[in-house]
Length: 442
Image 1 (tube, rainbow, N blue to C red):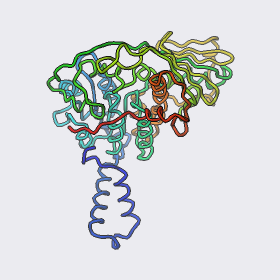
Image 2: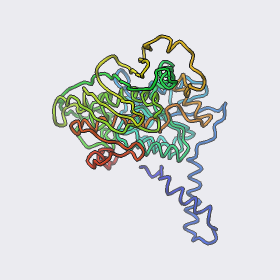
Image 3: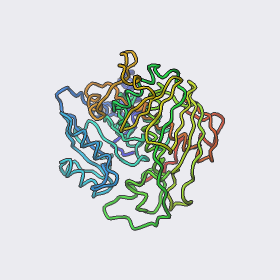
Image 4: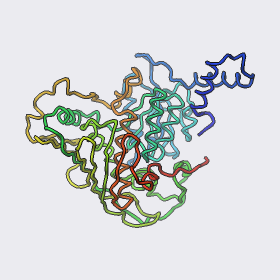
């Protein structure tokens, strides 16, 4: 972490000591350090934003100029369309990406950065959008929150379960507003399906089936010279060192376990998120998981390494079975003893149309957001938690990580403790809750 973005624990400790002990009893060096820490804390504390104040936002990892992966740029443009929002900074390790984003978002040269740590010190920056590959999400999210910024981070939120716990705990401890980019939470079709499921109209819930796309296979891919303008070492960041391979970078990062989790996290973080919402399990998780799947197309560092095909079964404490598969129509089915509802981004249907046509009583309604970006902006102004806050985003992607761990262990059935967030009686599986992180230098 950059020296300009210090560890919050040390700062808090010193500030607390300074407040609770008479300065007259302390040595001069300690007093100076305590006062410096308090001054720094004031700089990093989020400014109070009124209803008419402009919210200044920066984007880290906007993505490419044409085609490919540019989710960060899309979300930032969406936020920029909201009243009272100004985009003041962009950051990307690829020069072409950051210059394009600066042009599109009308950001001046003094707001363009290669190193996100320097961007976090940009004057009057209130919040950041994180659109980087998944393996960078945790570090940048925590650094941004420690630096006093609210965060919109794309899904899937993390690369491993332990990272998500760190993000969620940091957001809670520091009181930051956090929105995970699971935009289906702000889609009325999905909200209606969840309300129908939780209202009891389907009877006791028995199973939910989430249908995800099939992932790609590919390789072997050859290493190539690093393109001019790309800081490959910083793109890798905490991931293992490897030669530059075009198919590893930018949009294709999703298909490499070093940086992501394949379709199980890419689409699973959407549909499994809604499944947990429908079960009222946002703060919990399954108690067992077992998955089978097609192994990647080849072995070694030259092949895509995520599972393109999969069939995963989870059991929840309430007795509901969640079945996640790459077969069937993209969407999810929620089944109860007395009916079912299907929902996707294109349609919603039910075993009986009356299940959807009858208004849902107020007592069965859930958190309502019809615009994921506006929900984040409203959260910054009001300090009300967003619809897909850090805890929700963490729990939703954790389900996907559990599936990948079972698959990587050859389809082993694993028992999961959703309270302690550890596997029961399986040290090997527990070692996989946190991906290895390397120390790296710019």
